[in-house]
Amino acid sequence: MKRQETLSQRDLELLNAYLDNALNEKERQHFEERLARSLPLQKKLKEYTQLKVALRELPKQQSPRNFTLSPEQARAYKPGPKLYPAFSYVALTAVLLLAIIFSSEFFFNQFSTPMATQRESPTMEAESFAVKSSENEPEPLIFTWGYPEIGGMGGGAGGSGLESGTTFTITGLNQGAEALGQDTIVAGGGMETPAPEVGALSVPPEEGIGVGEGEEEATPSPEATPIPTEVEPPSLAATPASVNVEPLILGLQEDKAGQIIATYPQPSDQAERAEPTQMWRTLVSDKVKIGLAAIAALFGVLALVFYTKR
Amino acid sequence: MNGARLAPVAFMTEQELIEQALEGDLDAFNTLVLQYQDLAYNVAYHIMDDPAAAADATQEAVISMYRKLDTYRGGSFKSWFLRIVTNACYDELRRINRRPSIPLQPENSEGELIDSADWMRDNSPGPEQNASNEEIQQAIQHCLENLEEKFRVVLVLVDISGEDYASVAQIIHRPIGTVKSRLSRARQKMQSCLQGFGELLPEKFRLNDEERS
Image 1 (cartoon, each protein chain N blue to C red):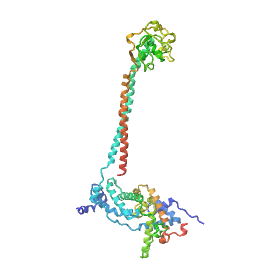
Image 2 (image 1 turned 90 degrees about the horizontal axis):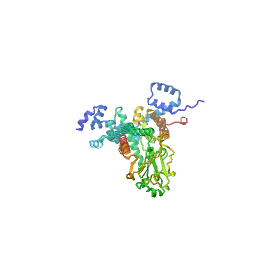
Image 3 (image 1 turned 90 degrees about the vertical axis):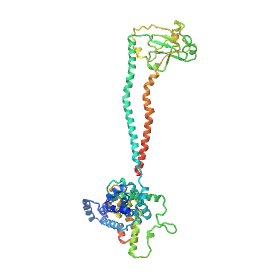
């Protein structure tokens, strides 16, 4: 018994293409050869041919009326100005401006960084010079004893402040910048010592250091002897052993008591360095960038909507 | 004045008419409409299966053509216009489907759906052959209506409008392979649907038991 041939979807597509004369010469010859051997294909071709003829013979529907446009309709349906080109131009302009801003920022950052380094380099050189000179020609370190809140009270006046339980710090003037960073040096009492190891000295409040009434009183008690900090400044560590370490106390200049000698870092200097970059990036560019990005997105979407609905 | 202006456009080629219409010549545009309106309405009628809806779709297509004429970029103007027509039919079908007012399936006087196709039988007296042809046409139109839109459009364009595969691909904006596939499916479904009419159809549309197995 001969097995019934089944037609695949591909066979039916070929059959339809053959029926609609959509095969090329080679495909048509190949299909006709197969058609001659296949009864299912022949039956299906007959069915589809009848269907095609029946569809073709459906009566042609005549238009119930003319669909031409009157001048009034033409005016009413006249295509308006096309908005999508304008929207797309606006979006494109915004994108271009964004690109310009981003590229400007890139070049600004590229060229502004070396300039900042150049501005800082003289300071660094000056510091290193100071270190070198201290190595070659050791000078006594000057410490300013004082307490900002009790500054100006002079010798012995620190008693009340010290009794309040707070500790204060004696800071060497030639310490690293981080040690001096935020402190205000006050000429509240003076003690000069050549001890290079001293970076910071903490004094218990009970000790009550009075300075200014006499050399002996101004000398720190044994308990108040400056204790080297754990981390010694490199410049001090490099001090030669031959340096005369005999204390040199210059005493207190009473007329300077309570006056601010200097503050570190210099606020005006920092602001001068930081302001131009910060102003340009945050106050101008960010707002403009956000606005331009919003415009580009909004008009881009509008252009797309009007383009698809045209 | 219009008559004097219409005389020259009557002898223009299609391309000349398009160029004139693009320059704002309404007579040239209307001449194009007159050339294609029967084709457009015929396609719309077989897609919509409703004369009023087909007329609406055709009118919408003409208006759309008027507004989009500047987007025509050459090629077959007929295919370009038929694409607008089929899109208008899709829009009209969507609009009708959103607000269906007529049941898609026939109902009897008690409001029950009729399963068989007897509702299409025309009992009016007349020549037997005419009745048979009308029944075939009604059956075909019924089966067309039951096809999915994507299959119906391809079948109408190929078998009723006589478009080739390439034109249909351009009209429905799909590859030729999709056209072939959809056409094959459409004819299979039509054949299956017509077989359901049984004795209503002439013998050539019927399959015997051996063929069905």
